[in-house]
Length: 372
Image 1 (tube, rainbow, N blue to C red):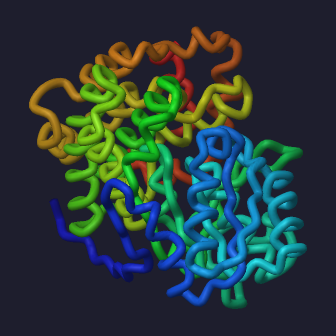
Image 2: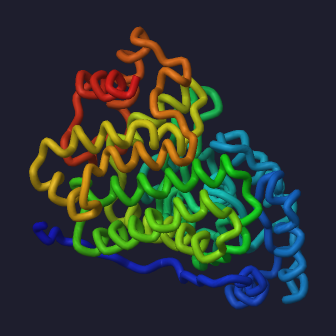
């Protein structure tokens, strides 16, 4: 692999280990926080993790308020509701506790709370002109790697277009990886987020922005996710395997920050928008076909070969089968007559430009047809 130039600036302190949620209060206080807004979702609130986090914050002398209404695939409505609570509370530090949706909502809230306007104003990179609040990210899933990224992915509530709003100031100051928080998640969440993390490692490995730094995290992220995924499916209480998945997902997040994503994610977003396919399932069902498409480039095929000594596309399909996830988009109601519209939407997705082989609309049609 040619060694492409890179400029990596570590922005997030990464803390890994069982029981590390207990450090959130001391860490928040150390960042100068006095009024902490905890951003989460109803499932995490019900699991009791939010109550525990709040108790640690109060124990460290902070006041705390909870916004616990984040929905899956957060929209501008979720962000606006969160901003209203943050403003009323006068939050000076934000805790994103949950899956990628909670962490994205926390970042989205931070943009508007500190810089004003609407989240649409920050679609793109580096559009926040004023300082932003410190964020502590605490993932309870092993999927998006949002804790190690400076982007918030927010859907427009009207158009359903997924907007990537990125700024170095939006990156979490601290990420706490406590594997104990992932044990209670339902099987479906485990498999969808796990497949998402796995696809992150494989897409970042081959993008046209990949470099020596991102490749380290893509490769190690794949090793951890690939090794841990089947173990977690066999024994959901395997804390060591849960830890491998969570750390692998975080490493994949670092890789995304330095390498971006590719065609599988471009294909996935229209499936989510038009057929309400859960994101992890959407990228998973498309990944084997994207691998085959990219493998026509000998250099990319060699990278895939170095990751798995066998047919990597077939291996991803096997993992989908192990997880009892659909391997055909027809299972979601997609038909031949939908492919052109899906392809035209996929070609407009921001990740398409980073795929090692730039797909045309016709290529996207064939990718969807192969997955049909």
